[in-house]
Length: 179
Image 1 (cartoon, helix red, strand yellow):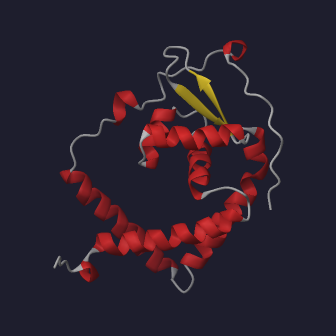
Image 2 (cartoon, one colour):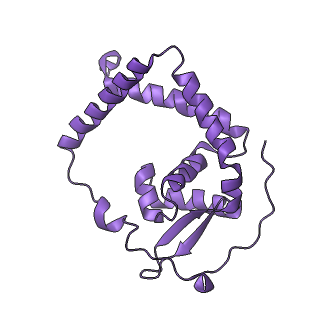
């Protein structure tokens, strides 16, 4: 029989906690008509609108073909648009659309409610300690990782959008009613 002392594993604690938070967020976001993965895409675009598609896949920790399917649906539903890069038309920059901007605050409220639930009964000092411990764990793990391939293949800085007149405009989509 396979054995491991999971009850003593910080990785296991984080995985099961993250799963619980993800399930809660999925339930919150379902009322807005968006999946957790789609919300994650929009959340990253909130941080850096115009991010290269390859960089977003890296940040989400998923393969490019998986992200392509998510983006196809989001583009079809009017949440994001892709723009070809001037220097390399194989690369695509992503932008949140006006439709996404119009409902983003409601989606963010879902995250705020989840944050409040997660931190219920936890003091501000305990939250700071948790943040510090997580930062130290990441730093410890980073010490044993090989150098990242992030510079180069997933960099948005060399990806200049094609001027608007050269970008094919996606067909209009009917608005999706959100809860």
